[in-house]
Amino acid sequence: MKQQRIVLSGIRATGRLHFGNFIGAVQKFVSYQGGDNLGMYFIADWHTLTTEKNPNAIRNNILEVAKDYLAAGLDPNQSIIYAQSSVPELMELSWYLASEQAHKQLVMIPTLKDLLKKTDGAETGPNFAMISYPVLMAADILGPQAALVPVGEDQVPNVELARDLARKFNNRFPGIFTVPEMVQDMVRIPGLDGEKMGKSDAANAVGISDSLEEIRRKYATRGVTDEKRVAATDPGDPYNRCRSVYPVHEAISSDEVAHRTIAQRCVAGAIGCRECKGILADRLAEIIGPFQERRHTLECQNDYVRDVLHEGGKRARVMVAETVAKVREAVGIELF
Ligand code: TRP
Ligand code: SF4
Image 1 (cartoon, rainbow, N blue to C red):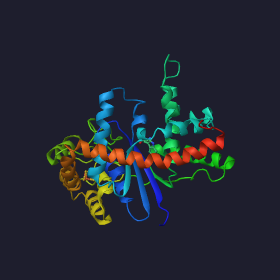
Image 2 (cartoon, rainbow, N blue to C red):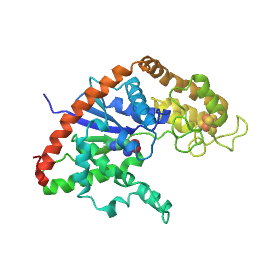
Image 3 (tube, protein in one colour):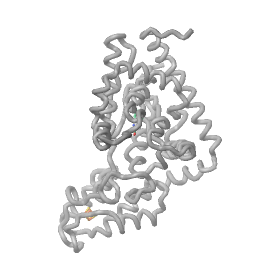
Image 4 (cartoon, rainbow, N blue to C red):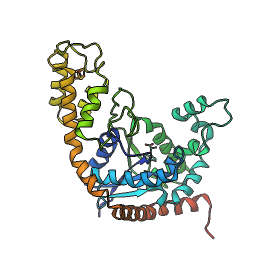
């Protein structure tokens, strides 16, 4: 059989997915399924612990995200779906990686740097796991020998760090890791206020379990559009000034013509924002309708979902164990 290309990515279990995760990330994961690709999609529950302290929330969210994955179309027959913590060897690998990782370079990563700056002078800053977050992430990627990692913009420095670590190890121990390619093809869906979409319960988020009426109401009352437009006949600037509606039109329409038409009508003052938001809400509902049906069926199938995670965890573990055995031996650690 032809060698499969491992496509790997993960999401933290901070809560139900919002529409931005769904369109921006999970649908992309689904699109990589098939052909020669072996998808490895996991729930980064250890990474969630850096910020989420409620054990029940962690427990619940893992199953919730797994259900969202499955309802979105990730198929356990084509992809390995698992929880990070099902592969304890990742923690061991992250230690070997950490031993090659300069602390200085780590704290230069923009997200960490900001975090540290904000708490500078305070008695306690970010927890230690937060600092080593990118190293564990490198283990997630290098452990299964991923070849391709689709991520959003905010994760780029973290994946770069993983690539660096792979190269460093490969210099010492040729061929020990696959140096992963990164694809930054996840679209960022703005929230209703035009800023980054928050968790599914945040005020600026569209949840993927929201009903059509809710989506309609949210855009109608809170969607930020070109503020310079007062009447529907005022010419608008969809590209620069419409912060929450046009970018979503652009991100979700599968054909160029659909969103170009919207833009032209906006520029010409031939469509009102209310109508435009209505069209958007309809399109969103079309996309999430089928998802919601499948999600509803999975609601009471916890045993099935646990089974999927169990099987996925076993498969991922075999793959990671193989890598870790090599690394262990290479660095001089023997299991007695
Ligand atoms: N840090 C990622 C996020 O917050 C989640 C993640 C953890 C991840 N490990 C990963 C993504 C490995 C890609 C590859 O979204
Ligand atoms: Fe945005 Fe549509 Fe209003 Fe133009 S018509 S400003 S694209 S909501």
